[in-house]
Image (cartoon, rainbow, N blue to C red; front, side, top):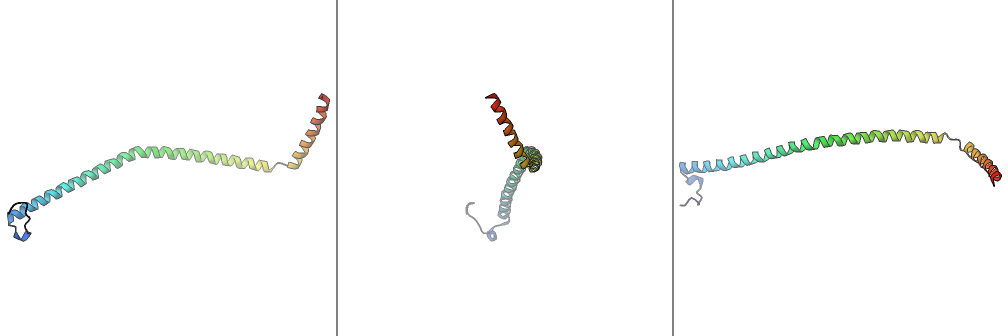
Length: 112
């Protein structure tokens, strides 16, 4: 029987069983080492990403915060301006414009 042929476990003697056990353990050891290496690489990639991305994220958040404060200030100013527009007496304003128009009309006759 050649080594490539597979025997049933019940047909193996102690030496063959130990060889198979050692072979299986080596394969498991390589798989565990590979998994640990991949996990370490993923951890390093995550840490490097955080080191790079967190400061950028904080800067973006600071910029957004400043923009929101400016927007709040602008909104308050617009609200105040609209309140001031609401206080205008348009009847009096129209009367003043009419009076001004009459005065300008009279003055224009002097200069023409």
